[in-house]
Length: 160
Image 1 (spheres, one colour):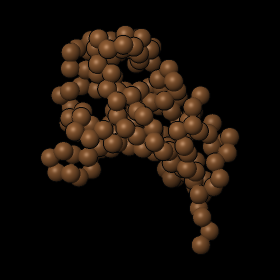
Image 2 (cartoon, rainbow, N blue to C red; image 1 turned 90 degrees about the horizontal axis):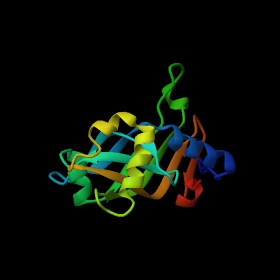
Image 3 (cartoon, rainbow, N blue to C red; image 1 turned 180 degrees about the vertical axis):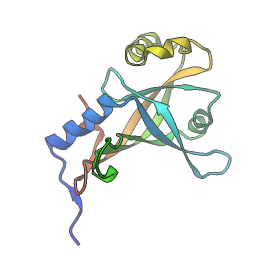
């Protein structure tokens, strides 16, 4: 059988970086600490200063509790367009380890200011004590650029 994964090229890298840059929400997969089973939640996402996904999460959310118990996660970015087969639209699955950036930690203020340039409505709650910025240390990426266009990406492939 022929390997369906294409060699990663500059076009695939650019498409993956575009999906990150354009994302304003994504589907976050975590492991539920109570049951050990997968759980998915929609979260707000912006491209961080490093070009990688950045989110803002509350300690009150189940996915935050899950990430504190086990930081291994996956993030799906990219949405189907208004027309056509949803499977022909590009999407990027990222495997990562979650890293929290809390209020008062080095770099938090600058990162929060950056986040607000992309998600200004978060100004209403970004300063609440239960909110943290969430960074994703990417371990692997899987790009489906549309029907028959699958690629495996390394963390270096996603760097700006």
